[in-house]
Image 1 (spheres, one colour):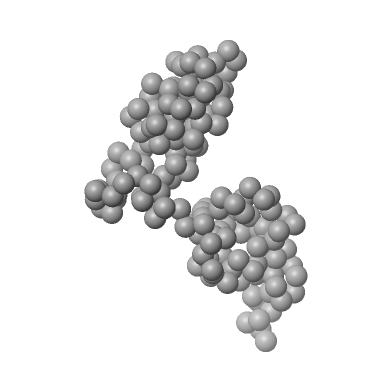
Image 2 (cartoon, helix red, strand yellow):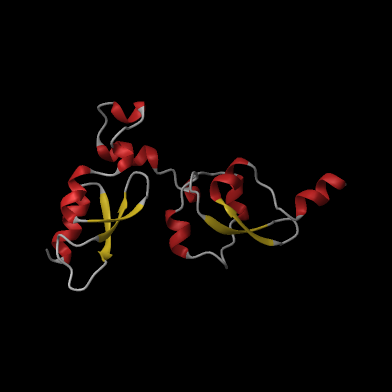
Length: 146
């Protein structure tokens, strides 16, 4: 299967096609894909993509309604940049990639760089942790002591 056909097949089955893992790449060889729902990265044979991601085999109750896929995706992907949360001011634009800023969600578990607006200290922390409790690992002990 050629790359455009593989990309289309992955898209049809709820995945983003990231590329082949072998050269030459045939449909029965593993391909690098990312689930559009849970963003899990896997190596799958193209035929296995039709079964869907593990996150879809036992969906939560809100996924069992009759909403369309695009409505579910819009509900699922709450981008940090569009959230209006005050933690956005802590985002370190110099250390993080532009692609991270464009794609990171408020529930993301990936570690990114942050910058304390009070003292300018830089640190890394998971997005989910910062959304839950916005604090600098170095400044917080100083604030508690004062």
